[in-house]
Image (tube, rainbow, N blue to C red):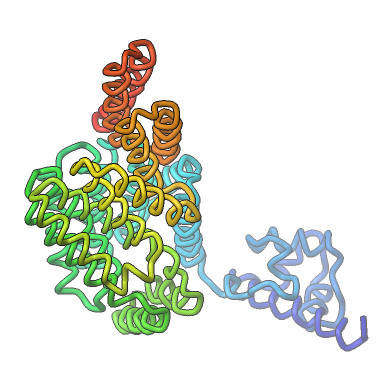
Length: 448
């Protein structure tokens, strides 16, 4: 190390130590006593001498810092902050860490961290953030009653603080929570409120709007409002089509980032600036659009079959579908299901196999599981039971891995019925039990 570098390190340590001492309103004598002399502290602050690591540790401890904070390369911003400001920074950092833990599925760790913060004397803004994150974490762990209560408190705080951005997130999570509790009427009300607020809030977030439309389509499907469900899914698809090209994604991210920056929502502005730089959502956009087509196709097939076929043929001509393998697989599965219902087994098999091949590279998804289960039904219709059993087992296992208990209960019961019809009562009992256990687990989640 050169003499100049050595001197610069000393000056860096000295200036940080002096800034921290002044922030604490201590004299050099008060900081020095009883272990050091005033001249020793003065020499350190002027960068004339380097303190030993042990001395630096003692002095840092007296000032309320770690010794690492005085070393070169460490951000010295926190040294100039008051204790109250440092506490706020620590709370914000804890919230960020909790959000990362939730996204990484380390939800129990996130809950433990957030519940520790609940004991602190937090500002109302932080109380709102705490309840929002806790509600989100409770939803992930199926603690649904706690989730509803905590998110309702967050919603009241957000309304009182006139924070529409947090209100949007909370209303969306409440809608998902109510749907998980099988209260689709209340879920619809939450997402309708969310959509209304989205339409009156700047900047417009098309990704969020598409997700809300998708949730509303699912609620309408459960409530057997098929026309409204189809309308919601089509709205979601229309938005997702506009975001198909990477350059359009980047432009949209940047516009949203600037909007949040103007509204002084710096956390959200930072988030979208990172998305703009890395096109983070380019990958997540694909499963979102494919799932919209998945639910839309299901809703269509429950209604008029001629209209359903016309919709599927039209969808297969759309550029957005043709350029998106997973969305194309989703539409192709529903076309295979239409052929199966029409007893056209060869066409059903061709389309189901094609859909499975297109969807498999994406890993475990509801699209792949659907393709496997449909192939199982086709094989059974062809009386190829061994192949059919393999497809059913693989599809049900995938639903289990995905944690889709409602789908698993329904499909297991259907498979059990087919086994019973072909004279396999013991196998049928196994899958009827799986259907029952999945229903029980789903009910348990809804009651917790």
